[in-house]
Image (cartoon, rainbow, N blue to C red; front, side, top):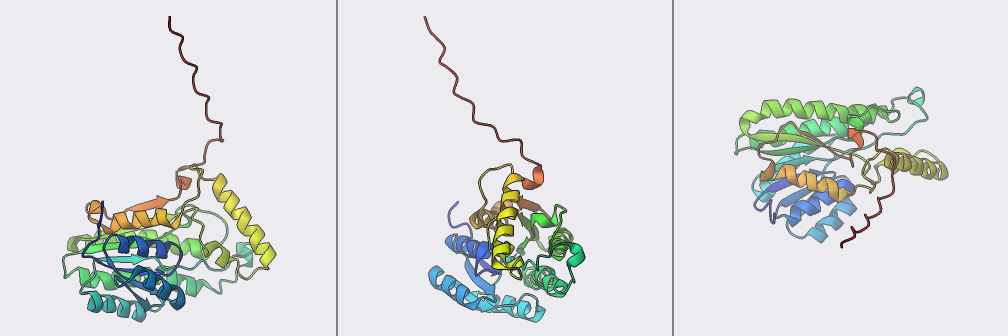
Length: 278
């Protein structure tokens, strides 16, 4: 479909880089007017220049619910409404040697950005949508919120909470024709993993990042890496009318990782020899 979001207004939190940037670019390409809500001013302003007048930057720390409310109000005043709220902003928290070494010092900040930001974005967007014909809310979780595993426990807990919140909000807001869905990316190369290891020495951080990436590839049935653009396609689907009968859905975009372990890689079979004819 072409111009799938023509006439729609969207807010994308964490829209300056990574998955958020890909979503902004996809929404604009499909005809939406987009507020890029982020704390990374320089990157966001560069993106807005590239996207043209259909986008605008709004400094927003989603861990502050007053800033989230102000951004929603800004979108409505600037573009005349709000049809899509994409709660994408998130931070990883610090990687520790083990949970026993985690002092939980970043618990409050991770939960504020990852969970409170999603809840506030949903609440303020839905308050407008409920009185203006409905809309679509797209929340960003992670396969770390679906599958248990070691490391970054606070991050995993925040992403699992987003899934439960999304389903609960979908039930309550359905009466207003507001759809609330969730994407759970996995094996998407972004800066998030590197950021979680920022406190480590550069050499150790690079070595561990490579090891984690290799493990992700081993655990993924599809051989190719995912991209931010793959996630943006899912965000476009939930934003547009093709998903008008979907709400409370959690969609892993992970190359099959959450489906199960891949089979051992086998070489492609040789083509069959032609059958002799008489």
